[in-house]
Amino acid sequence: MHNQRSDLVISPATQGDCRVIARLMLARREDEPRFRKLARSPIRRFIYERWVAPRFLSHRADAFRADIGSELAGYLILLSEHPSVVVLDVAALKRFKERGIEDRLLAHAEETARQREYPYLRAVLSPGDVYTVECFQRAGFQPLEFRRWEFVGTVTACEVPKGIKMRPLVGRAAVERRIHYLRVELDEVQPAGRELIETHYLPRRPSLGQSFELMHDGEPFGFLSARRERKTYVLDLCTLPEWWGDELEVALVAAFPTAAAQAKEAQVRLRLSTTPHAEAVTEPLLALGLDRIPADPGIWFKAL
Image (cartoon, rainbow, N blue to C red; front, side, top):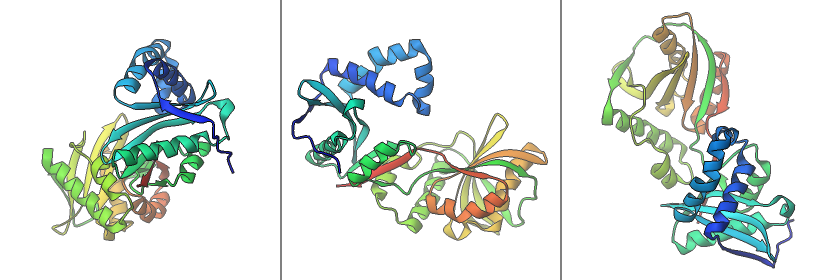
């Protein structure tokens, strides 16, 4: 059990504080993919630390400092995006770890969200950061079911399954049909925090590649978008729940990229948007020679 600090004081960060917090945040997170390239470039890092991050923290976000006596012990960064307040970062400085400071800061985040009458808190957490994940679990957060999974590897050519046709989609029609099938998946899953998913995580613009509505014997059953990134075919797939793991769905994953490449083998990266869909299709895709990996960091939320 962590000791709660009665002498901890949480207050809004000043502009000068924001410069300090920006340096601390980058130092703490420089191993994360989105910060790694920035951290390797001295010029970009200097610009980020000196101007970009402090300006963002002081003008767009809500930054807070936590003090014990006259010492900075931790910080909290929030961003209001209705219907949720986003915890962009929360941390206790190294010498103040294991003293319950993150717990107090997350309680402050919840209080802030309630004052603004926002119904959710949410955060993006790296699964490798066990300490931070445990802090969010203690605060009552849970992972959002709407999470992209990838199946990556090389597939061997096979024929497009009989009866399957692909109707090309463009522009707004492509977005609408993709959203339709994602909502069908959500209806099947009935995830907690669906309002968050509808607001923040459904697509708003067409895919960068080609888009198709999948038809079987004239009946629509799913959506597929495809683009080529160097030698890899990136596929985004969503289908009716009764098709999850079906042999025709699995065969399509191998048939489309090899037919497009006009080759006996092709590298593929298949993306699915819900964990239950990924669970249903994992065994046959592993048998196909693909590896399953999470495509995004975990999205955690708390309903208020």
